[in-house]
Image (tube, rainbow, N blue to C red; front, side, top):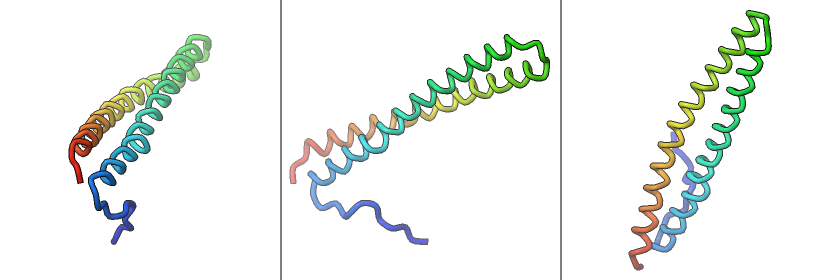
Length: 105
């Protein structure tokens, strides 16, 4: 299966630098920002499910809320790992931009 090319063929150092900058701002930074928001939402869920578990006497509901809380906590760990990986990619992208900035056509 052939994939359609997303980027036109790069023909200069300046074009390469611009593409790298676009990759950084359009992909890695955007993904990191979205993960930050996702982490905050999961944190809010942890808090809410904890309060719901504390406020009910119904054992089935309490158990369900605690399970949901634990799942959101696990989600936070996984999202944080994704974020760390993307931050490494973002740092590498910056190094690529700096390398290209030091070159001339």
